Image (tube, rainbow, N blue to C red; front, side):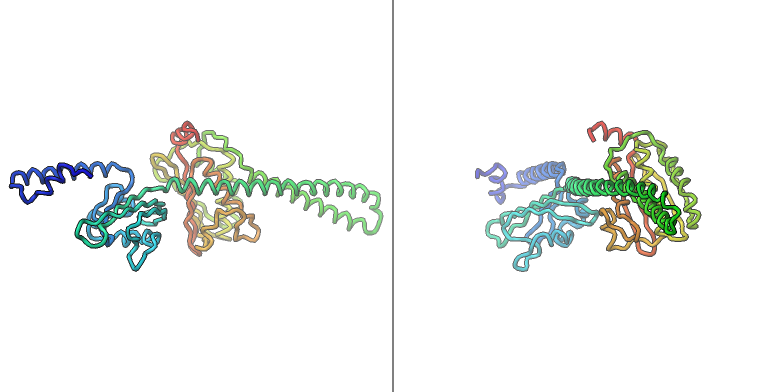
Length: 393
């Protein structure tokens, strides 16, 4: 490779006088500033570390990505800074996280300073002439969190959709024998009318009524089930979230009073009165969450509902002091058919999550056994939701 003008000057630096040496230093400083400006405009994190893994340079993107402080540069090892990274790159020959003279590409997850998915590209630097070992490494870190989450949500939506289609098919097939049973029970009822004077007629009549009642109950269960799982697109209209919430609480008022559960609504600051949403679906979300809270608190307790907003989102928190959710159950709460209740169908939270996603929102759950549960709903404000729709959501 042809040597640059700067390389030629550096090659005879010992021959430079003080004036030329000063000019060289200024030139090097300008080039360094230019390079740092270029590196700091790059959206990926760039890290340079020595052969021991100690970080010697990090651009502006890399620091917040892994929680690096400027005072850490030159003193801390990347492997100690991000232990998850050390585990993702298999050590060889006792080396702390590096594979000598190898170009590495990895995707991994870090949990500090926040949960992120990172793609790593690491290239060894040639060692200077007459030196021993590696010259170090250049590491490029790309934040792929949004892409990874989008992929996971798409896979989850596909899985949920397949489950719903299967469940809808099963429910439809159950409807056929129920219709047949209803017809035959009607025929039995007519024949029974001619046998009313027989000693066992009353008992047979009672049995038929029980069967008809059970068929009717099963038919209602299937109808409600199909209505709940059918992935209908939300019909967006202007809604007042707080007013909608109060309407749902009014319907559940008697059951809340019977269970001796106190409900408090706390509104922090001024929140937007109107969002875009589907009235029926949002009501279903509120019904499910309040019902879950009631069942978690058994015969007494307190349910707090807090409302707040920022420039883009409206947040509703449902806070109960019930039995809580164990840490082993937490990862499964949005899974289809997963429930800890004897009479639960395991679809409630999955449906709530689907409705929130369809509305451009999110749901978060925090819980601790025997302490309680906090469920946070996040709705985009009307101007954000409108912008999402205009962008082709």
